[in-house]
Length: 94
Image (cartoon, rainbow, N blue to C red; front, side):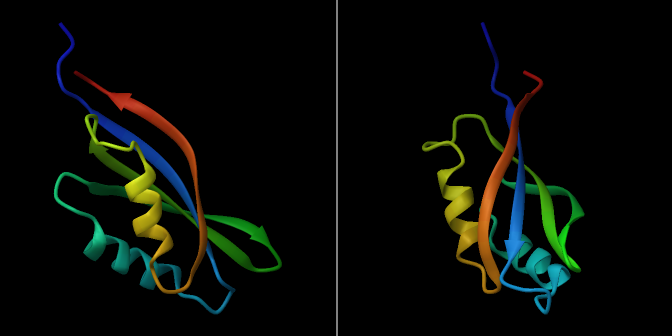
């Protein structure tokens, strides 16, 4: 029997422009994640011409209905975010 596990989603968040604070987006993410979701790590990835994307490592319950749709919608609704892209999904433990 397989036990309940968490999922690690790696999500790339693209800001609307280089004037948008990635730290500000990170703080908003922390405030918007529902119970059971956890921001584990953040990184920044250069895109072009001084513009960086924010890479978020977020755990969520495996049995989340709709997969990462809710997470993507939540992150997309944050002020200053242009769009989001799920880069990777991994099952953690059991």
